[in-house]
Structure formats: C-alpha cells, structure tokens
Amino acid sequence: MQTTPVSIQRAVRHHPLAVVGLVLVVMFLSFALFASWIAPYDPVSIDLPSRLSPPSATHWCGSDELGRDICSRLIYGSRVSMLVGSSVVAASLGLGLIVGSIAGYYGGRVDRIVNVVVMNAFLSFPGILLAIAFVTFRGPGIFNLVLALSLGGWVGYARLVRAQVLSAREREYVEAARALGASDLRILARHILPNIIQPVIVQAAIGMAGAILAEATMSFLGLGVPPPIASWGTMLNDARAHLFDAPHLVLFPAATVMLAVLSFNFIGDALRDYLDPRSRIEAGL
Image (cartoon, rainbow, N blue to C red; front, top):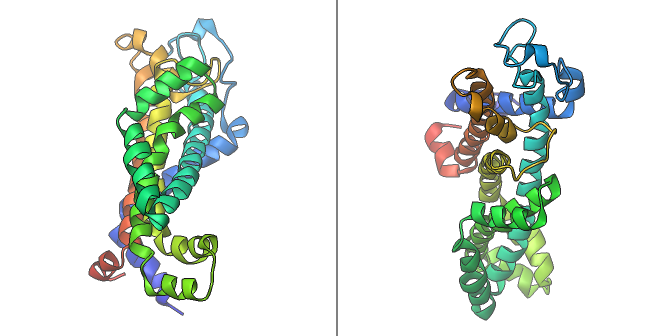
C-alpha cells in the first residue's frame, strides 16, 4: 500500500526539475484557461500617457509602446501558445502514428515508399521554412499556423513509430494474435501501439516545447496570429525598436518563452527516465 507514495517521493527526489516544469505547465495552462479572470487589464486597451512605463505596482511588467499592460498580454499570450502547441502536437502525433504504423507493420515496398520517398522528401526541407512558405501562401491565422507547423512536424513521430513497430511486429504476442485470426487493424490498435506508446509520449512532451518555440518564431516574423491578439512572438517583434530605451519589453516575453520551453523539456526528460525500466532500476524507483 505504501509502494506508490514511496515511488512518487523517489521520483520527485531524483527529478526535481520535473516538478518545477510541472508547476510551470500548470501555471501556463491556468493562464490560458482563465486569462479573462487572472489578467489585471484588457490586453488590447491602449493608454498612451503610460506608454513604455517601467515595471511598477500599477503595471507589474511595465507597458508597451501603446500603453498596453505587458503582464496582461503575457497571460493572454499563453492561450495562443498552449492552443497552437497542443494542436500541432496532436495533429503531428496523429498523422505520425498512422503513417509510421503502416510503414513499419507492412514493410517491404510500402515501407520503402513511405520512408525513403515521402519522409525523406519532407526531411530534406527545414520544417520552419515549410511553415513560412505555407503561411505566406495561405495567410496568417491560428488554423493556418497549426497546419503549417504540423506539415513538417509529423515526420519525427512517424519515424519513431515506424522503428518501434518494426521491432514489435515480430514479437510472440503479435504472432499469437495473428495466428488467432486478428485483423491487421486490431493487431496494431490492441497489441502493438499500447506497447510502443511510451517513447511516443516522451517525444510528444518534448515536441510541445518545440511547437511553442516555433509558434513564437512565426509570430516574431509576422506570420502568426494577426494583431491585436496577444502573442509572445509578436510582443518580441514589437519590442525590437525599444531594446535599449525600454528593455523590459523584451525581457519579460523572452523569459516567458524560455520558461515554457524549459518546462516541457524538463517533463520530457523526466518521463524518458521514468518510463525506461533500466533507468528506473538504476535510480531505485
């Protein structure tokens, strides 16, 4: 009865950064869900007399060149980052699971076409360039941004799933299910995928950090959500002209992006160690 609490205590002791990451993720999710109640000001409300105000009791993080409260815009910006990040990971993971499972399970010509032709074709171009080209053609917006970032993000999941399925399809339990007449879909869904999902979960956690950073990059380039919607990348782009006379315009959004990326990386590293039996034995978990 005491095994689970002791295991959790050991996990916390061996991965303190994961606890920090979890707290930060909960904080950002709370900001995204309850921004209208948490934010002290309207993020698009202009107050020119207080423009470029430094951090104070009135504006905790200062105000931007239009007098908008930076703290409120950071809180509302978490909505865009969490929505885009989770949507990109979900879309990329879903497509990667389907393509990787088909290539790894059937092998042969199907695997050669999918792996050598399709995946390598997408990997030959940097993902951010594909996203820039797609958004430039389709126009800015959250939906187009998610599609653009998912366009190149699915390949990493597909290659990981393919490698895991190639290894698992020859296992005894798969042969037994095949001998009992189970269909290919049932074998994949009920026998193979549940046994290979652990590294995919780790990849998804780390991919969330990459998706948030990619969204900030696209918004910084002016290819993210249109103004006046608050976005961390857009705030960094607007702050370039005031880097020296009002450095708080850059510091707070940059620190927020850094914390969001680090939090998911911390969680991904902890999940990788915790889900790996060898790492758990070495750590005594």
